[in-house]
Length: 394
Image (cartoon, rainbow, N blue to C red; front, side, top):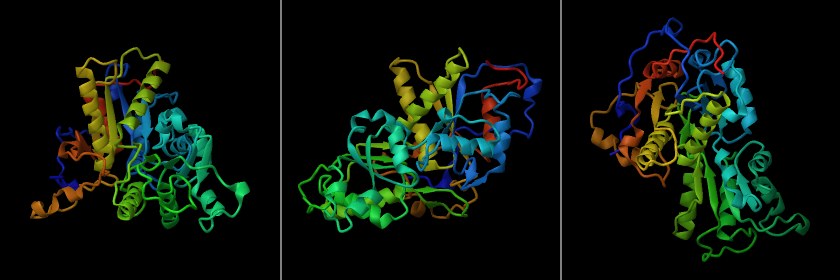
C-alpha cells in the first residue's frame, strides 16, 4: 500500500521554531558535522520565480564574508545546462556566491562512466547537449537533431555526414519534440545502433541506455505539477515493450533517487569540509526537497545504504541521511483526505520509476516543514549548531 501525499506523516515531528532562533546569543562558532543537500525546483524556485523563504534561509548559511558556515550542495534533477550556469543562476537568486563544485546535476555522475566516453553516443534532451556531453567526457556525441538531419527519411542521403554506428543512448532530460525523439530512439534501439536499416527483432538485449532524471512530475510556475523526464521515459518504455514484447533495460539510472547521485553529492560535501580545514567528520546529511517520490525516497534509500555500510564497518562515510520535506512545491499538505483510503492509497499512486522497488517507508519524511527557511532553523536546532556569523570559519 502506497501512501498518497496527503496521508504522509513524519516519523519524527518537527519542532515549531519561531522567526528568531537567537543563534547569535549562543556560544559558537561550531565546527559542522553535517551538510545540506538542497533540491532546487519547488524548494528554492518555482520555474524562474524565487521562493521568498529561500533567500532568507541562505542568509543564515553564510558568514559576513559570504563564506558558508556548513557544507552545502545543490542536488537537482535538471539536466539542461552546465553546472557553472546553474551555479550562476543560484548565486543571483539566493544572493550568495555559489560555486559549480556545489552543484550536482542529474547528469553529473556520467563522468564516472568512462568506458562510454570514447564511443559514439546518441544524446536526447534540451539545452546545449553537445557542450554538456563533451564536458562530461563524451568524445563523439550525436544529438537527435543531427541524426534527424542526416537521416531525413531514415535512409542514407549523405555518406559524408553519416555518423558512426551508435553504441549508447544517453537520456539527459525531456526533449521538446517528444514524437521525434521517441521515434528515433526506438529506431536506434531496434536496429542495434544502425538507424536506416530494417528492424531486427533479434537485437536484444539492445544497446546500452543511460538515463538521467526520473522525475515523473516537477513544479514550475503553474499551480499543478508539470510532466518531467520520468513521463518521457514511461512513454519510451511502453512503446518499446509494445513493439517488441520485451522490457527496455537501463545500463544505469541517475539523478534522484539513485544512490549514484547521493554518492556524488556526499563526495562534494566532504570536499568542501576538507577545503575549509574542518577536522570533524561529516556525520549527517540533510536532504531538503519537495517531492516524495524523488527527494524523500532518494534520501531515505541512501540512509539505508549508509546504515548497512556502517554496520559492516566499511570506509568512513556519513552515518545517516535525513529527509526533510517542504510544502512549497510538488507536495501539497492541504489536499483533502478522501473518505475511502482503500480506493486511493494503492500501488498505482507510486510515482517512482519502474525499476525502483516500492516501499512505503521510503516515501515517509523524517520531517515536514513549511519552507527552506524553516528547514534551516530546524536543522540548526537538531544539531545544536550555534554559528557566529561575524567570525571567519577557516
